[in-house]
Length: 96
Image 1 (cartoon, rainbow, N blue to C red):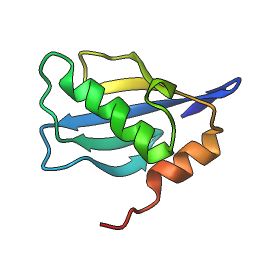
Image 2: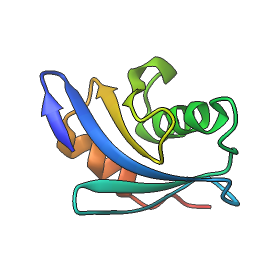
Image 3: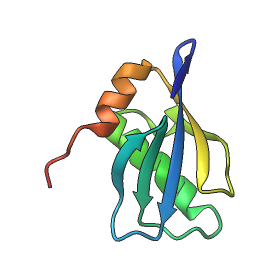
Image 4: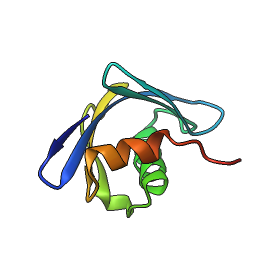
């Protein structure tokens, strides 16, 4: 994860087709996420952006995939949050 101006860049590894959306963990600079949507016609990418936007309390357009649209390894830009705040929000446990 790195910061460029008023935006954070996050490296993620996505596992599509999971039972539910979930942040699995963070290791070696990569955020690991499971997404319920299948990897067909961009469904998993849209679900990833929506899930992270909701988790960060941001509008949907403020989390964008900038690299890796067809790969499990992606780079996302998060607008309006510091690197520390984005990582803290993504890794905190949510009540069920």
